[in-house]
Image (cartoon, rainbow, N blue to C red; front, side):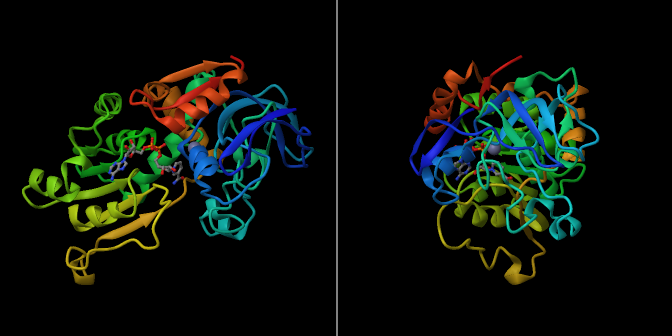
Length: 353
Ligand code: NAD
Ligand code: ZN
């Protein structure tokens, strides 16, 4: 089979590989559509996970099951499936402890295009099919289904980590696709004001549609100072971090009320340390929580998030700004994600309707 691979850091291309073999609890899936992620860019061009040779990229997609192992009960060849980016080993001790995304070690629930070949391929392998796949509702098209692999679960995880409550004022730092889903999730959780940090017109328009009430720019100076000026000096109840670097934590802590919570889902690619401002952290006693996490994967979550889309409560279609048809456009879509033109949110490649 052919797959689009990272040949080494900074180099990619189509390669030939054997079709993956299906273990007793596994499934082999043929993609219907795949999406490019900012993480593919970090992996390939920034060496975010270290050197990888001839590893097929991609962890966002949906597909059709072509083979299942003899222990798989709930899926069969021909089933259309949602596929999470994170596919834990559900019998691991980490999963039993409630942190399935770290099954087998820190962040090790992320297998596609990290520990094994990803989804930019004619066929891909899914471990623990009953635990990780979800049936794709008929009303969800393949393009929207791709947004359920990573963008919706990650953006919503930021909301979960920040523990957004009814009536909260929420600050969302970064409104790329992940931050947009954090805005949508905060809105569904009953936030009152949602202050979004971002200026690209396409993202601002989408964020407004998802419930953002006010906008600021990190290019206009300190985020915290702008937020404090908008909140009578009090700050916000919750902060979700979905963009920026280590410096955003300082801003987040300063912008937060005592008792507030920060949920980070952003990948921190540079710097050795995150600085927490001592005074604004209540000299150690401010009850300002800082949490960060990899998205939870697995079937139950995929079914629930899929139900939100299928029921019409969540419209993910504004995210897919660039839709291509056919594998021959994959590289173009990947390079587009790297170059991030202003009107881009997510590129998706449809392989088969
Ligand atoms: P993105 O690059 O499209 O969006 C990030 C946005 O943040 C951009 O629009 C950028 O302009 C903006 N930004 C940059 N600096 C900023 C600053 N100082 N303040 C505010 N905004 C700033 O990326 P994305 O696809 O939306 O993903 C967001 C992050 O989430 C990435 O780092 C990605 O690797 C990470 N991610 C994490 C998980 C997870 O499971 N935790 C999963 C997927 C992606
Ligand atoms: Zn992704």
